Picture 1 (cartoon, one colour):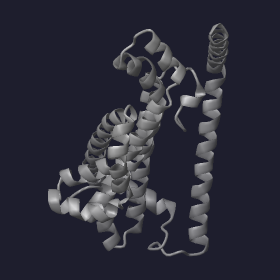
Picture 2 (cartoon, one colour; picture 1 turned 90 degrees about the vertical axis):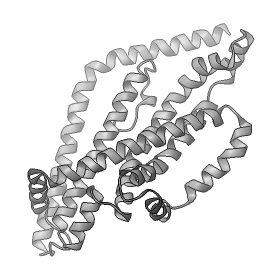
Picture 3 (cartoon, one colour; picture 1 turned 180 degrees about the horizontal axis):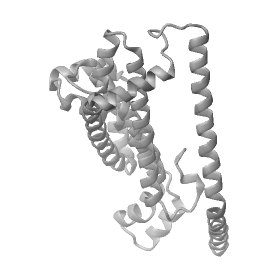
Picture 4 (cartoon, helix red, strand yellow; picture 1 turned 60 degrees about the vertical axis):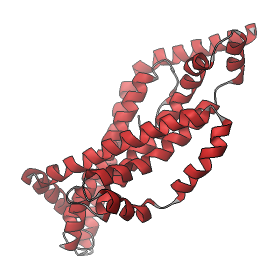
Length: 286
């Protein structure tokens, strides 16, 4: 037991030393990576523009970046993009909150009971394997063309990644620590709070990160099936009018939404798991 404590202490000392040195190197590394990322974006846009003009590609097939940026500016300046964005953003956040809450709650129950896992998890997997595009029209018929159906569709897509990662995280708690707490007469709640939950949090945040990105897809799928407003609804309108530049502009907006939401989850993860002190718990891109 003493050797394990010493090993843990040494590893923590090494981690603290690495984290103490990292602030000196991190700003330069961060700036360099961001500059290279922007340079790569500039190269891609330049090649895209040049290829479209050099080969005289029709705008209906692939519009040049200049036309896409112009459509993006016009959509934002006119307020059309903002009005539809507000609808889609509410669907994304509400659906993600509903799916994540249900995923964590059910994951906590299943993760601590093999009996519940054998009873419920096969049905959860069976429901997850059903294509959401197939059941989206049914949900729209049941709950209408408003926000409710889009939130439910988004929630069903965001639910499973959080559930699966919560179960895996709870099951990954070290048995030695659990046995030690039981020897010291700790109850189930104390074991959950002191060992299982801290061990599961990195896994839960991975599930939340996947779920928040999938929530964007879920909201758009719901709007494709049937909607009165939203960016997915606007994409359908622009497709019917063959305005490909506006379609690409909306796709850029959706991509930015996904990146910002991912960054938000990574920010919360860094604040919640500040005690981890390890790069292994950091989300990709976070």
